[in-house]
Length: 283
Image 1 (cartoon, helix red, strand yellow):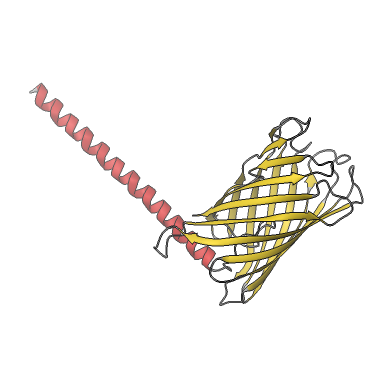
Image 2 (image 1 turned 180 degrees about the vertical axis):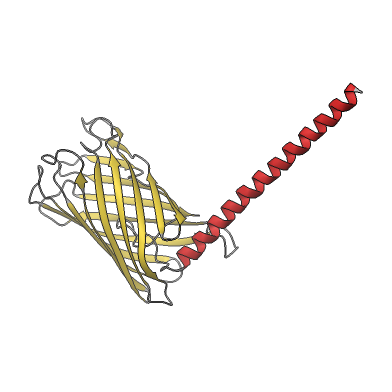
C-alpha cells in the first residue's frame, strides 16, 4: 500500500511540475512574441534608413552593435578603440528605446596605460515620426548617462549626462539626419567644461544594399582645458544595409556592416584621422 501511494504521489508531482513548466514556457513564448510584434509595429511607423556610422539615429533601434576605431594622433601614434561604447539597444515599449553601452577597451601604442573606458546608458523617446508613405521623417529626444568606470585614465574624470535632440528627413533615396547634445559633468566642470556636440549626416541609397554617406562631427568646447576651441571632422563612409538572415518577412533578424574615415578639418584636433568599422545585428 505504501509503495502504491508513493508511486501515485511521484506521478502527481511529475504531472504538476510538467504542467508548471509548460505554463512557464507558454508565458515566456507569449511575452517574447508580444514584444517582437510591438517592436515590428513601432519601427514600421518610422523611416527605414540605416543607422549612420557616427551620428546617432533619429529613430528607435533594436540592435546589437560593435565598432572598431583606429585614431592617428598628430604625434604619429595610433590608438585602437574596441567597441567604441556600443552595446545592446532595445525597444521595451512604444516610442521608447533603452541602450546598455559596454565599456570600450582602449589600446595605446604609447606610454599610456591600456584599459577599459566608461559604462553608459541611454534612454530615448520618439517624439514624432512618419514612414516613407507618411512624410519620411523622425524626431526624438534622448539622455545618455556615463559613469566614470574607466581604468588608467581611459575614461572621464566625472559622471556626465548628455541630453540630445535628434531629427531627420527623407527625400526619396536621400535622407539627412542631425543631432545636437550638451555634455554636462555631474561634478567639477573646471577640467571637463560643458562641450556642445553637433553631428549631421547625409545618406543616399544606391541599389538595394548600398548607402554612401558623408558626415560632419563637430565639438564646441565651453569651459575646461580646451575652452573656446572647436574640433571638426568630415567623415565619408559607406553603410551596407541590410542582409536578412530569415526569409520570413516578419522576422527582423538582419546584419548591417559599414566603415568610414574621420578626417580632421579644424586647426585644433586631438587626432588627425580615424578609421571606423562597424557591425550591427538587428533583432
